[in-house]
Image 1 (cartoon, rainbow, N blue to C red):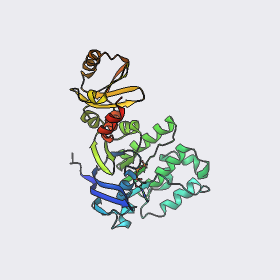
Image 2 (cartoon, rainbow, N blue to C red):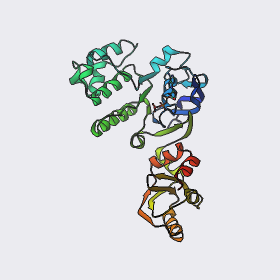
Image 3 (cartoon, rainbow, N blue to C red):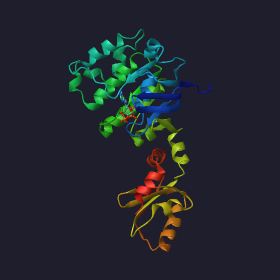
Image 4 (cartoon, rainbow, N blue to C red):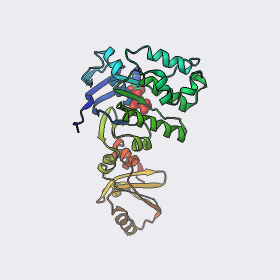
Length: 312
Ligand SMILES: Nc1ncnc2c1ncn2[C@@H]1O[C@H](COP(=O)(O)OP(=O)(O)OP(=O)(O)O)[C@@H](O)[C@H]1O
C-alpha cells in the first residue's frame, strides 16, 4: 500500500473582509481519496476556507497547495484540478440539463463524456428538462455532474444536501461515495452531524475562523472526553459551575429546563448520588452514549459562557 499523501495542504490561512476576520489561522490537510468534511457554526469561515482551496478567493496570508499548486497563483491549473459546487450555485432557470452539461464540458481540455456522466448520475432521462423544473435532488445531481465533468482530482461540495428530503439525501450520499470510490477526493462543507458521521472519512471542525479539531468522526467522539451524556431536569436550583467541577465531568450545558452533562462512563451514577446529597431529584433522567453532535457542541462552545449562562 502506498503512503497516503495529502492532496490539499493549508497552513495558517488568514482572510479578512474589512474589519471581519473570516479566517484567522486555519491549518488542515485533505488526503488523496478521502471524503473530508468541514463542520462549524454559521460564519465560522468554512466557505472562505474551501473557496480559497478552490482558487475562488485570495488569502491575505498563509499557504494553500492543491497537488503542489498555489490556487491563487495558478488559476488555470486549479480550474482543472478542482471541481466546485457552491452554496449559491444556480444556473439560468431556462437552461436544459443537456445544454448545461454540453456547455460545461466545452470549458475543459479533457472532459468526461457528458452522456456517460449523465447516466452515472441518473440524469439521462432528464436531458430536455429545464433547470427550473428540476426537483431539489435532481438539481444537486446536476451540480455534482457539472463539478465532475472536467475530471478534477478534488471536488468541493458546499452544503450539498441542505433542504433535500431523506431519500434524496441518501441518494446524494451514495453518489458522493461513488465519486470517492472512482478516485476523486471530496471536500464537503456540511451542517449535518449525521452527514459527517455517515459519509466523511475525516472531519475538520472550524470555529471562530480557526481549525479546532481534525479526525475521523469516531476519533472526534472519543477525543471529546464525553463518553456518556447524562441529562435531567433538576427538581430545584442547581449551580452548573459546581456540576462542572465534579470529577469525570467534561461538559455542562443547559437546554431549556434540562441540564446536559457529558463525561466519563460511570458519571451518571456518581452524579445521581451527588444530587441526592444536595436534595435535588434528577427528573426525566436520560443516559446516552456520546455522539458526534455532543463532541461538536463541546468543541465549538465556549465552556465558560455555557456554564455561567446556565447557572440558576
Ligand atoms: N465577500 C464577503 N464580504 C464580506 N464579508 C464576508 C464575505 N464572505 C464572508 N464574509 C464574512 O466572513 C465570515 C465567514 O464567512 P464564511 O461564509 O466563510 O463562513 P461559513 O462558515 O461558511 O458560514 P455559513 O455556515 O453561514 O455558510 C462571516 O462573518 C461572513 O459574514
